[in-house]
Length: 170
Image (cartoon, rainbow, N blue to C red):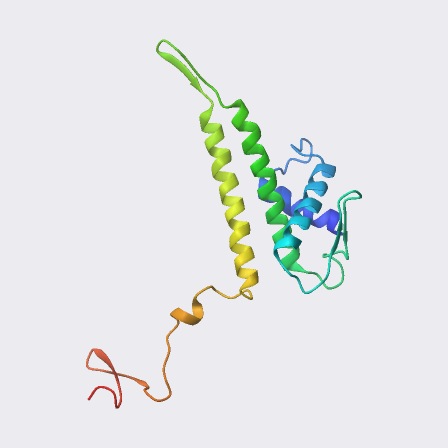
């Protein structure tokens, strides 16, 4: 399969655009967003493979889903695409957010806007977290600092409900 088949499916799951009979975004629009996101991601992250992105023809070369699949590229670009789409929706819905009051009755469309704001922040934060994780070598940030450490010169000895280092505390 090509990236034009796999990556749009991932993006559609992330933005919950799954009803193939009534997509909110056309396939062309999703593919175009993926290409734009790929260009932006390549400016932020250095991958092992060198990718060429052509905005005018909506192309990514080599295909990240081909023989040696590049999961990091696929996931980061898909997350960035979902972030871009959600941010765009937030701006669009922001223009439609109205509140009308007439006496004791009122209509407030702000709840919809707040929902899109939460979705946009969540997807963009997921991208930022994944980017940091990738740049850190896919390791848990801070693990080396926070994991238990035992010096070969002062091994940790457990006894009587407390820890001591042999030779350090008598």
